[in-house]
Image (cartoon, rainbow, N blue to C red; front, side, top):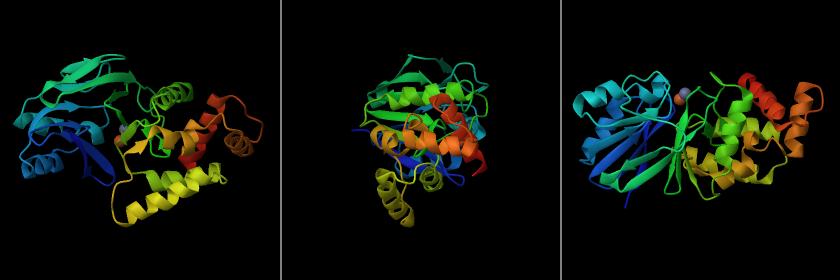
Length: 254
Ligand code: ZN
Ligand code: FE
């Protein structure tokens, strides 16, 4: 029985640790120290590292971790991550025999050019692409690329658990409410997530169904979102990619 645990790092990152009480794999270890503490406290043996993209808050802990235990490092093909030993692209399988797990790789460019996500066992590890009630900034990709990536993730089964890499949920909800003030599911979500943060609990994992119902970036075909984006932009908008581009730029200024 594998458990997925959030190890907080920096101000608002989560490093996800998958473990069965003996072996562990970690996703996006931006910092080595909190990972070591967690593994040591539970006497877990690190067997693999999975990374989603090249940003320092996701890969910065790799040299220190690998200096202690040289394990396979899975990561995106075509991103500048010198510590990756198993470069991956769309559809590639990742098998972690010690944990009895296997994942499928999804290419989700937009936040960075080569960003990947890992999907398997009803779990999605999506780094900085899809956030709870939001999405990553467009550092290297176009709105069209990011929109397609988000559509790909939104097409996964509704009960898929979404493990993203940051605790941005409440600030994302503040923006989502401005974009879609009459969304009842969003209001309900805000109550629930606020209660979790009040006791310092993670708002993650989310689910794909909840994201489809409340995340404005997955709702660019909804008339209410289109109307809000059009008001912001000053002319009618119907193409979901245009709506997405306006929402993303709006959120950048929010
Ligand atoms: Zn990032
Ligand atoms: Fe990040």
